[in-house]
Amino acid sequence: MPLLILSRRPSRRQAFFFGWLHGTTAWWVGIPWIGHTLGVFGQIPAFVSSVLLILLALFLGFFHGVFAGLGWDLWRSKAGFAFLGFPCLWVVMETAQGHPLGGFPWNLAAHTWIDVPGALLLSAWGGAAGVSFLVLWVNTGLAVGLRQRKGLPVVVGVLVPALLLAAAHLGLPRPAVTPAVPVRIVQPNIGMMQEASWQQVEEGYNRLLKLSRAACDEKGALLLWPESAGWPFLWEGDPYFPGRLRRDVEALAAQGCPVLFNSAHSEKGKTYNSAFLYTPGRGLERYDKRHLVPWGEYVPLGEIFPFVGKLARNVGNFAAGRGPNNLGWGEESLAPGVCYESVFPGGVAESVRAGATVLVNLSNDAWYGDSAARQQLFRAVRYRAAENRRPLVRAAITGISAVVSAEGRVVGSLDLDQAGVLRGQIHGRSDLTFFTRWPELMLWISLLGAAFAIIAARRTTS
Image (cartoon, rainbow, N blue to C red; front, side, top):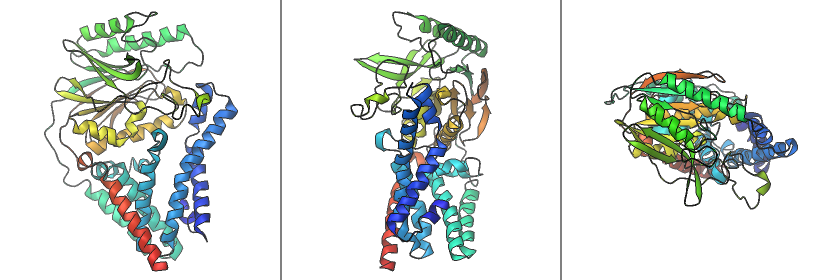
C-alpha cells in the first residue's frame, strides 16, 4: 500500500523516483544475506560486497519505479481502472524481474500469503502470479479507500479475494494416486567452511554416512542427500579420492535404498551441477541443473565483471543442462530441482508436463548463514508443489528439509541447523492442473489488463 500511495505524485517522473526509492529500500532490507555471502564465502572485501548489494537493490528497485511510473495514470482516473491496472501491472513487473541476467523471482507478493487459507490451493489455477494479483487487489482497495475516504473500495478489495480463497477449498479434485512410497531425507548439517579443513570435511561426510545407514531401515525407501552433501567427493572420481563416493553410494544401495545425491559431472569439456539417482538393479540416472545461480555458478557478462568471480566450489564455470530430464524411481517419476532453480515456476511445470509425479529439491542453504534466506527460499519451493499438485521432498544441507503435500502443506520438517533424518511417505500424482498446462496464461492476461487499464485511464483524463 505505501508503494501505491507513493505513485500518487504531482508528476510521472516523481512517481517513478519515489517508486524506485521504495523498491531499492525494500530489497536492501529484504536480502542483506547476499552481501554476507559475497563477503564471507566469496572472499570479496566488505566494501565491495556492500556496493554490490546496493547495486542489486537499485536494479531490482527499478521495477518498482516502473510500476509506480506506469501506475501514475491510474490514480488520475476512475477507481475501476486502478483495481484492474495495479494488480495486473504488478504481475508483469514481478515476471519481468525474473528474467534479465539470470532472473531473480524472489520474495514475490504471493509469498507473504503462504499461510493464508486457500492461497496455495488457488495457485493451482493461476500460479504464484495469480496470488500476487490478489495481494495487490487487497492493497489497491485499501489505498483507494484511503484516498477517497470511503469504505466501499476497502470492502471490494477484501471481499473479492476472500470469495476466491474460499472457493479454492470447494470441489477439490481427488484423482487416483499411486500407492504410498517411503522417503528418507538426510540433513547432515554441514556448514560452509571459510578455510579449507580436511578434518571438517571428514566429520561432515562421516556424519552423512552414519545418518544414511540408519535411515535405510525399509527396503526401497528413497534416500535423499542435499546439494553438496558429498563434497568434495565426486561420483566420477578424481586423482585425490578415486571411487570413494561411488563405493559409499553403492553400499547404501546394497542395503536396499536408492540414493538421490548431488555431484559435479564433466562431459565434453563442460561441468554440470547434477543430481544423480542410483537404484539397485537399475543403475545410475542423471539430471543436469538447468537454471544456474548468476555470480554463483556462472558470471553473467563475465568479461565485464571478472572481479566478481565465482562462489561455486568446483573449478570452472558450470554449464546449464537442457530440457526436463525426470528420473525413474519404481512407479514414480522424479522431477529434480537443484537449489535456486526451484524458484522458477515454468521449469517445474515443464517437468510435470513431461510426466513427473513427485518433485524433489536438493539445496545447499548453508551459503546464506543465519539469515531469512532459507525461509524465503522454502516459501517459493512450497508454491511449486501447490501449483502443480505434486508432493515435494526437500533435502537442505542445514535446513529446511521437509516433506510437502501436493497442496503445499508442510507434512514434516527438520529444524534449521540440526542433523537428523526425516522419515515420510508420499503419494505421487499424474493429473495436470490448469496452471501446469498454461503456466504463462496469467502473465498474458496481466499484460492485456495492464495495457487496457493504463490506456483507458489516459484517455479519460486527456
